[in-house]
Image (cartoon, rainbow, N blue to C red; front, side):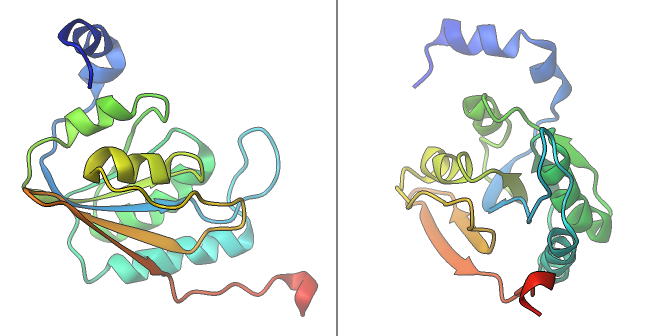
Length: 169
């Protein structure tokens, strides 16, 4: 739990002022889709196809906001969903999960959060107080649904999308 002085220090940054306040009741969390290599890689062809499949999945689930870290792979994954929902992607810093939680603190809306293999399980725990298994570098298909409220719950499902690598054809 953050102390008031720590919270004020975090929120005094310009980044905190930039983020809009959103009230969240149901959170969906996913890891970015498959990526190329490099320092800040873009999505691979398979990753782009997975991002489109994710957008198709969320077509029947009205979202009020889409969040992603400022990296290309998360932004591109989130953009596919946001475009179909006529939303913009709001960036959050992966090293400031408490700040993201504060932005989503009151329960009212449905939100998608796109993160990384090392941040998604931690975010699920932060929002729900429920531990989930760590993700590996090969885990791209897990979708976490976190219902907030008096008794938070977490549902984990797998995307039905499967990408055939050109090497395996």
